[in-house]
Length: 429
Ligand code: NAD
Image (cartoon, rainbow, N blue to C red; front, side, top):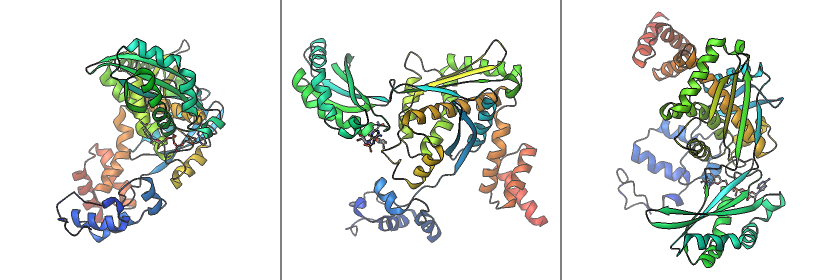
């Protein structure tokens, strides 16, 4: 099947998807000049068996392992949580744990959330008159919702399903469009498949009602009806004194007013949120897209968390963002490690899960702002980063810490310096 292909240079591989992972790997080995050791590393899929991976996505040749650690000290609504976090970035898990401890001193995190309602969008084009088409759809609401709900009796049995709809007329470069929004309560599912199925099912009805043509039928990741909120009070003593409280408040005001800063401020919160979303096999792109779109929902892009000093001089923080996560669906049940992560997290509903994620985001944001407002981010970051640099330079076992410590002390965290230190230490041995 593959004999006529120039194995060494062409990326056109007809029927690649039909091959077994081992066969695909043989082709990639040839293409990229992989060594036997590299092939063996790819073949060693550890706790995610290759046949499971092969059913999860397409064209599988191996798996990509990432460290998973546990965020400790979290207390949310009076309940203690251990937070599984998968990330490649040093200091994220330590920072979240440290911030959770500070917040614990002030009574822990408090959270709330809306019902788990997602929006399915149906794009109707080539309509004669937008307002007339809108009325035609709204008048047929009961029938459209019934058609949507017929698609998912399981979701209905859990109390979810299509609950309402709305329609908007928008002006575009391609003329007027009617955008129908289906509001679907997804209960403990993230809901993209459920919502997309419903949106597709009701589209012929909408075309018939409006005389228009439906193109897109897809969930919106700007999940403004599925929001999670977390807030906390951190005693000034726990955060490092009133000057640090002031620094964090100034940092928050900076992020609220300046999109350049807001992007990094929000990225800091996402460091924690995405690590948990990843560990649990949920869709982290949906959370990133939703969070950032929400941050620009009411005007220019801004921060989705804020910190202020209260009248006692303590720090008060809050965060609110869309949280489209599930306890079922996607890879949540198929990935063996995601199942274990869920067990460790011990949440009973998608809402509780979303609220925990909001608390993690707030903790991560606090840790970053505290470091930035006091000693600077590099001190904590660099000592962990130095270990990675030491490994890159070839350090192993006990040498990793020895090389890393020297580089941090010298404030020269660079691969060339790591190599010099490593050579020096090895010669001494
Ligand atoms: P899914 O279809 O696998 O599972 C949802 C279904 O599970 C429900 O429709 C329901 O029938 C059933 N179910 C059983 N118990 C339930 C309970 N307690 N609560 C709710 N439903 C229950 O998954 P999904 O959540 O519909 O879709 C998630 C997947 O869709 C993710 O993998 C995501 O990556 C993917 N996706 C995302 C987008 C996007 O975000 N834009 C687009 C397409 C696909």
